[in-house]
Image 1 (cartoon, rainbow, N blue to C red):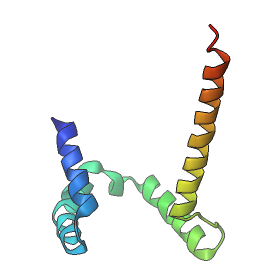
Image 2 (cartoon, rainbow, N blue to C red; image 1 turned 180 degrees about the horizontal axis):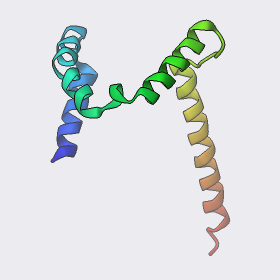
Image 3 (cartoon, helix red, strand yellow; image 1 turned 90 degrees about the vertical axis):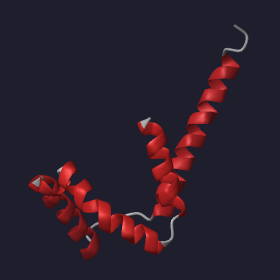
Image 4 (spheres, helix red, strand yellow; image 1 turned 120 degrees about the vertical axis):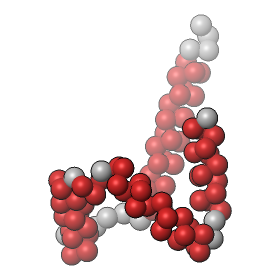
Length: 93
């Protein structure tokens, strides 16, 4: 049941326009934040602030979303190539 709800929510967020997303976030984020405890853990907040400052100051380079996706695609391709090679080696068994 909860998987179906998650899928519906994901689909809604994926296609919603900016106005609807803003309304959704305004309504639900305070409840989500309160329940998640993320904003209450001072160590997490301190770490995130530190990383943000390093990125803004140029101390850390950071990566773009496109670079992350390209890296993931490259690793997936490599893994599939290894799997195919392994399958071919054992096809005689």
